[in-house]
Image (tube, rainbow, N blue to C red; front, side):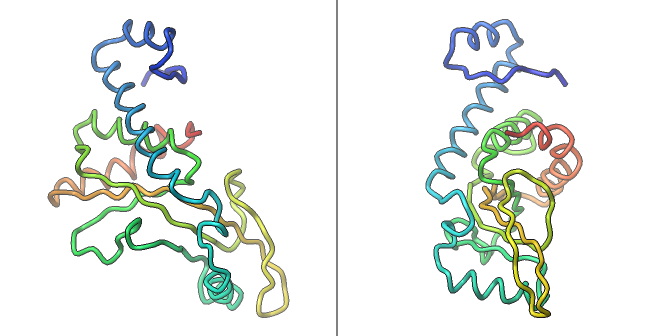
Length: 193
């Protein structure tokens, strides 16, 4: 895979670079920018941190109580329109920190280029997550939680962007899942911004 510079197609330099590349490469960059913009539009409607996203201290207290008694190692908060967990359709949910919008653009453009998805197979959603322990990711907010046994444990929280895949067939679902497991972490996640 080529290591392309980070470009916006709205600049003369980007335009010249894109025109020097093959048609498939140009199309990929156009679609990457398009999907990144779609993610920006979808995620800008949501708060960018856990507490503001949840917005209800009682919900956070309830979730933290589960964590402090070790009845859970984490919890998520989402609203139905953004996270249709009760859908009768088969769905595949993929989430990354809401700040990594370019990641979503590259991921979707690559999947579309490989003919794994079509644009009408996806929607965007959002959720907030809180987990016990530390993982060292810079987007996560780390805090202390007093446990039921009196000890203190680290927690990490985030707001997450979600791609909701609506696979039109079982074969499509397998292809989406295979790409996400095999290729997304290797080709995209570690370069995401």
